[in-house]
Image 1 (cartoon, rainbow, N blue to C red):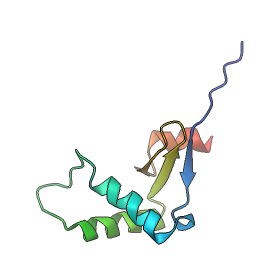
Image 2 (image 1 turned 180 degrees about the vertical axis):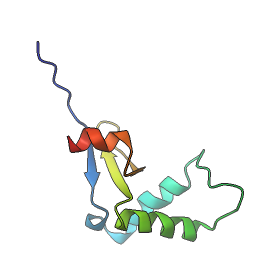
Image 3 (image 1 turned 90 degrees about the vertical axis):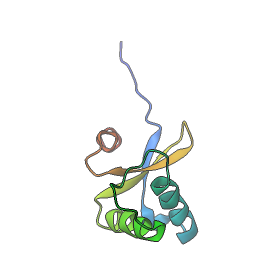
Image 4 (image 1 turned 60 degrees about the vertical axis):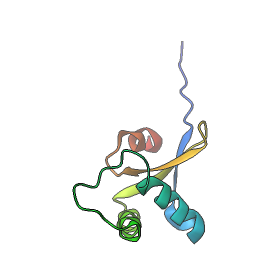
Length: 86
């Protein structure tokens, strides 16, 4: 019996999003509950700029899950990317 696993997540190229959509995804990500940036308080604009740099350098990627209809940003070493790329 062959088991087929249906992938519901896809990588979304950051440069394929409008600037408003990209900013919204990044802002939602950096303001999510439980996100820890250490002891120093970092302004929202700085956090957004830092994530954008990671996306542009391909150290992070936007992943959209069709099943849950949610987007997140993951590090280039995240296990989810391995399952998407295979």
